[in-house]
Length: 223
Image (cartoon, helix red, strand yellow):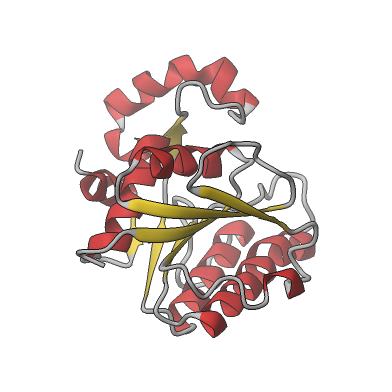
């Protein structure tokens, strides 16, 4: 993709992470076209932006034949495990993600798939923390699906993009703590801008690792 524009699919744009990634894509000259796949409309009027509304991510029939013309997918859809039964968390994390990824790779195996995972994900799938095992299982399966390349992003605490309409309450009320945490633990914090920029750059130019921790995200973003 060195000399061509990127046509990118983004999921989760109505959430904080997906909106942050979308903001960077809209600001990038590298991104030619964006397709949002969401349960509800994002409501942005950019000429580069189109949407497919998908009320049920377990019924992908509306996507048939519509995804093959894109070179990258930035998968930002995810749920918190807090207060959720283990079976439901696995369904909404592993089953949903892998089902969507299989639909993509069937239409275009040359696509680059970028997945927002999480810090402390368990690649061994054998640890004591359930959510970390499920994320690890999801990452491992994505690597086996046959995409041209897969990049697994493990951000920690994320600094919101100013002006975003989907910033989580925690970040609104406790955001003043983030600079303090970053000062003492810089490898625990990155911005959503850096995450989006890193995704665009690895989709265009690749990266030396498939798993990107916070330090790698900042490097890929150029900061």
